[in-house]
Image 1 (tube, rainbow, N blue to C red):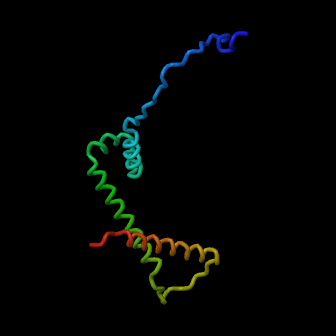
Image 2 (tube, rainbow, N blue to C red):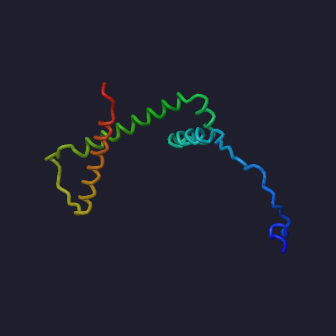
Length: 122
């Protein structure tokens, strides 16, 4: 009885050398970084080439945006921890709303503390 492989038309000889695959990303990793940066700055796809060619104005824009966020965080913390004015009237809020406001204040305080802790010593 003939061998099954021979019956199917295959020979018994060894196959050729194994094929190796060389992986190359063709710069996709760098493009993903540039796309993430562009997305964080709320820019459209038309800015990809400009970000790659001249990143300085975009870094300045990012720096300004970070400054504005830090400023807003500082102002939110100041408003949340300001002493109560005795001349104002009294308002009533529900217990759940009070807990939510306290939680928001704690979140802002922790975020600001983390921001200050991450600053390099000068």
